[in-house]
Length: 473
Image 1 (cartoon, rainbow, N blue to C red):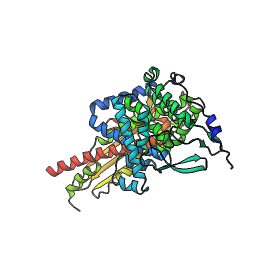
Image 2: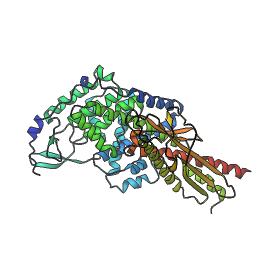
Image 3: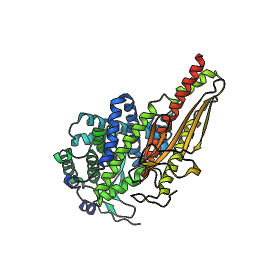
Image 4: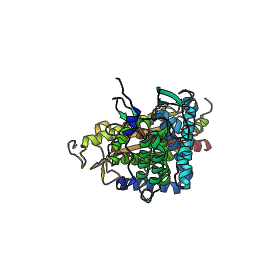
C-alpha cells in the first residue's frame, strides 16, 4: 500500500480535545463504586500494613504492563503475576526478556511512585510536573521513530520536552490519526492543565477525572513518544487520590482499551469513562485478593514446618432481566470452578513435598445458598463444588480439608457477582459474570491466582500447626 502522508494536512485535521463541561454529566455506576471503595476503606483501617503490601502488587502490575501495552516488550498474565508479586527468580525472568526490559520497568515503576507522591500531597497538577513524569517514565528509552523532512527516522527521544516533530499516526488502513501540531502543543497543554484545575473538574467523580485527563493528554500527544504511558500515569493520580490504586490496564485488555479510546474519539465519551471506571475497580479487587493471600504465612515456611517433623528424608431457557439464560449463567459458574480448580491444582502441585499428599476433586452441594437472591447451579452431573485435601503422611496422619461451593444470582445482570465460597473460612471470591462470559478476563485470572495462593497458604499453615502439636505430644 502506498501511503500519501502530508504532515500539513494531518496538522490541519487535528480535532482539539473537548472542554470538561462536555464530560461533566457522564454517569458512573455509583452502587458498584460504593461497594468496592467501602470495602477498601474497611481494609485500610483493619489491615494497613498488609494492605500496603497488596497495593504494591497492584502498582507493579500496572507499571509493568504499561510498557507492554506500547510494545516495548511482551508479557502475559503469568509473567505479570511473577513480576508484580516479586515471586522467586522474577529478576532472572525479566532479564531473559532482554537487557532493556528491566531498566524500562524500573523507570516506569519510579514514575508511578512519583504519581503516588503527588496524589498523597494533593497539590495541583502543573505542566512542569507532567514533563517531569515524562522524563521519569521514559528515562530508559533512548530513541523513538519520528517524521522528518527526510521521512521516517529513528531519533533521540527528548525527555521532559514537548515534541519537536509531528507524531501523527498512520493506521493500518492508510488513514491518519491526527494529534496536536507541534506549534499548538504548548497552548493545548496549558488548556489541559486549566481544565484539570477548574472547579467543575475538581468536584467531579474520580473515574471521570481519570478518564478525561487520560483522553485529553492522549488526544494532544504532547511528547515525541511515551504519551500512552504518561496518560495512564496521569490518570492514576485521581484513582490514587480516591482509592489508593493506579489505573490497572493489563496487556490482554489492550484491544478493549483501544476500542474505548476510539469510541471517545467518535464522541461516545461514556464508553471510555466506563472502561476506566472498571479498571479502577479491577485494581481495588486485585488489592483485596492480594491482601487475602498475604494474610497467611508464605507457603515455603509452612511446607518447611511440616517437613521438619519428618526429618531430612433445570430451567435452561428462562432468561434473566438482562437476557442471560440459566444455561449461560450456569456455564459461567462451571467456568469459575474450572479456573479455580486448575489454579489450586497448580498451587499444590508446585509444593514439591514428599510428605504432603494433596487430593482434589469435584463435589455436589445441596441445601440453601448463602444469599437469598442466589441459587445453586443446575449442573449436578458436573459437580457444583470443589474439595481440596492436604494430608501429612504417617506418623501424623492429619488432614486439612476445604470445600468450595459456587452460587449464582437468580436474576443475573451484567454487573452481578457469582460467589465462590470457602465454606470453612466463611470467605468468598466474588466475580462479575462479565469477567467470565464470553471468556475469562485477564484481571480475573490474576485475581484467581492470588485467591488460590491465599487458600493454599492458609491450609498449609493449619496443617503445620497440627504437625507441631503432634511433635509436642
